Image 1 (tube, one colour):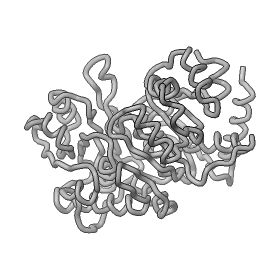
Image 2: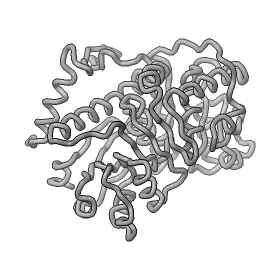
Image 3: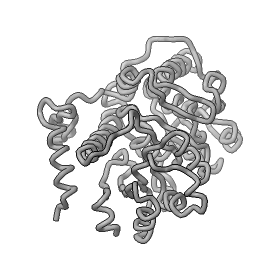
Image 4: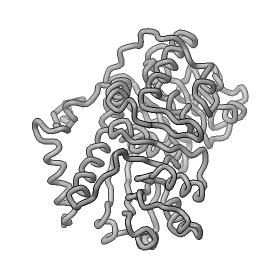
Length: 374
């Protein structure tokens, strides 16, 4: 039976997607199957980057240690990477370009540059062994791999026909120097062009490459943005005054669909700041959450529980963070009440989706989750 929250969010989404509204929907037929799409959606990831980086230009976007970049600065660097990939490295539209590195501003800019150059961003699991990386590169038929020093050492000459270009973290102008180039005409990228390959099912067998075109990637991203707007509308109606800018902590790997779509790509659409962590550490997470006024946290279920139960939690002001989301595995039922009790200003929430659907699936939110945590 639908709850009061279900009814409220349903009514808000109906209003947001109505004719003439900000998220008006339309019908689209693909392979004989009718689909619902957002009428004003950008056609591709490059179009999405251009639209929202222009809209939010001077706002801060990426915080990575000492590195702080606005949306406009990030877009400019991505354009330079795209130009370098085309002019210096011969990337052609449709080429599968592997990315093998830890989370960083450089990873994000490289991803954007690959898409803007017309390539297919192939997100190699940064935790893989050298043999697993070689298998992923071969399966996707990568022509080029962009890797940091640690993953390059693991690959160790096993990239087959793919060339490996080493990049670094820290200041992107220096770290991405091997990729940067002059401004060149960029290819037209359509909704039907291949956008990404992510790897899935590695826990139950050999990892498989899940492909997405730009239409799927963009609409997966916008589906999350509409959901976020609906939730913000609901909370505003309850008297919440939203901060000038949303802010999320990135503690999950960007090569995973949770990090890539609802966390990273959605942030373009809602103008959200991203605070990057090179590796998970609950104490450092709390320090960053206080310093950057983080409003949203997502991780595997254990991560939010580690924060809630940490003996030093009271030393940090986490009052800005309204959501402690989890995905990737079921959250133990007993954790839900513990998180709410330890952080009574915040909501634990749970989501489930698929790599093949760009993370879109279902969610258990707020009061609903507290009432039915199983």
